[in-house]
Amino acid sequence: MRRLLYALAGVAMLLWQAQSLAVEPAASQAWIRVLPGDLPLAGYLVLTNPGERTLTLVGAHSPAFSQIEMHRSADQSGVARMMRVEQVAIAPGGRLAFAPGGYHLMLFGRTRTLQAGDDVSITLEFADGERLTVPFALREATAR
Amino acid sequence: MLRLLPVLALLGGCSDNPHPWALRDISGLLPPLAFELHDGNGQPRTEADFAGDVTLLYFGYTHCPDICPTTLARLSGVLRQLKAGAGRVRILFVSVDPARDTPTVLRAYAHAFGPQVVGLSGSQAQLAKLAKRYRVSYGLGKPGADGQYEVSHSSAVFIFDAHGQARLLATSTDSDASLVADLARLLPGDRGGEG
Image 1: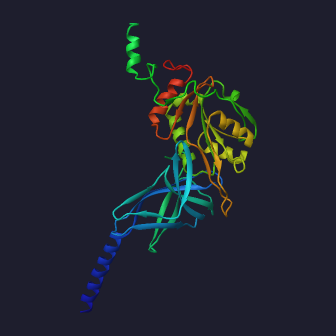
Image 2 (image 1 turned 90 degrees about the horizontal axis):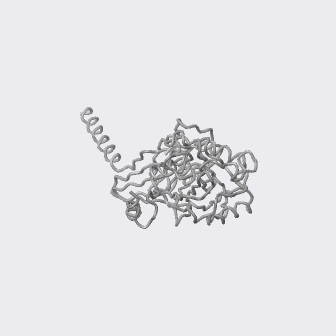
């Protein structure tokens, strides 16, 4: 009887895990362009929302940076501008690319030396309290 | 054979150039390269220092983590495709944010994008004069609580031939292939070139 209970608990656990995996946001192609000194850096990634509810990214933090903001660059009639954004929504089943020339994480104040070839962890914070820690590959200034 | 020429001109559409450029042709629309700035060693630099080279003029600032490095990474990739020809090309990165872009910062920044990139800046008066010459605008935003501020700047790349004449304008929508092809034509000594 006890064995059966353990088995049922195991199945329940697996089902719960499978379900949570299916609705969790997923990140890919995460990278940071490393610039010299302590210049602010940009972080890029592709976020997908496989769930059935809108996912709202509200912030990010990392032990490698003192501050992280979300920004969006735009080319307005030949003038490049950058604006801070407080939150970014990803529709159910949708994806959002943080990519050069558009949305990016702006990373201020390195807490340690960063070198191309290494990676750093950044934790993304969502409006529903969900957290997603993503490894970002550090790439050279000339990376594309 | 000569009779073919008008036909070729017609094939070129509105342009009377039988070999239209892939990038926007600005020949005659903007004045030749001229500036008084300083480089990453704090040394005064003028257009005369780059005579004989094809130059790419781009305005930006180093605290710009997205558009500026993306543009410079792209240009340095284009130069790699030009192979030996890249030795005759200089990318002039002009910082419009001299308060933060000290020569030391500028030098390290330019170096990160390759030996062909030259970091330049100047006094507000020198920068304003250069911006006016090429009809570009830039503006410094209000500093936030952390002292950081944003800067708007022209996103275009102005391309000058080896004689310092303004020839082409590249924007973020132009392909690498367009840049490579047109720069190769501008290189001095290139048979298809006009430089």
